[in-house]
Amino acid sequence: MKLTFQCPCLSGDCGFCQSCSGNIPEKDIPYQDITMGRAYDMAKFYNMGNIHDNYWKRLKKIMKQECYKNPENPGFIPKYKMYQGNNCPSSSTPTKYTLVSHTHSYVCNETSCRALYLQSTDRDKQSLYPKLPIYNREDNNHQICIACLSDTELYHADRWK
Image (cartoon, rainbow, N blue to C red; front, side):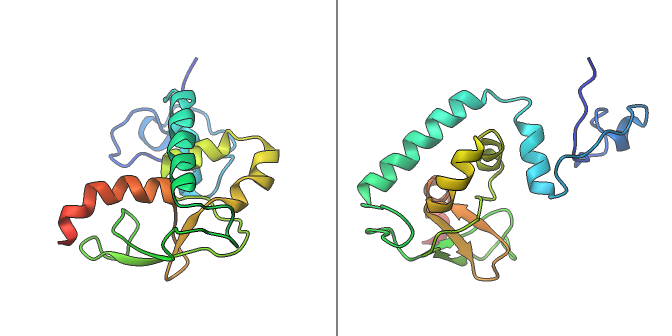
């Protein structure tokens, strides 16, 4: 079995993708969005069961601590956060994110979250995901869920002092 990837590699030397190998036949690409494509590829390699369990455990813990019910009743989750992530306009300056205060169609832009979303049932995609606590960047081009934001805050906390 040959393993092919939907997204082109970043290095140009992977040997797996169409652009590197050239001898793997083209196949239909299920996602035109590059972040969804990377999530689709990630799901092929990782034990998504462990990632799934860990993610939902972290998310439920935060939601319970902050008394979060839904976007219209956010409890004590802060309405604004500063975040410095991979897709921020400037890698040296944190950017302001606002908590989405209505039922939404956003999916967190972190690759592991997108991979979990792709493996979710249609029912969960329609009823659960639109109510999750998610932050939207000022320019509306990037979203991040509270679980991923909390993880990266621990990592970046010392950079903002």
